[in-house]
Length: 80
Image (cartoon, rainbow, N blue to C red; front, top):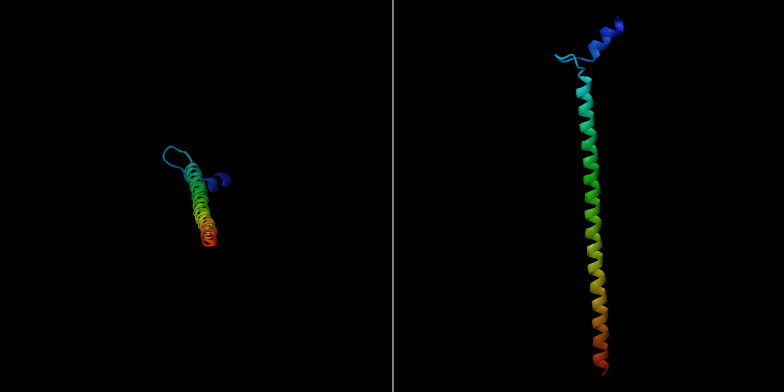
């Protein structure tokens, strides 16, 4: 009998007699979903940063290639 009294104190019930624990379970599930959404946002932020870095690297490589190609063209024109 002591166990059931303690259980009723630790697990409040609503007017239908359902344990509030189910509401806690739903809240925990909501928090798990929120944590997964936050983790997904972190991954999206990392992907965005990686794409930005890749774009900057690609632009630097293109500039270097064009600079080298134009320098060779200038050298050929000067030699001619």
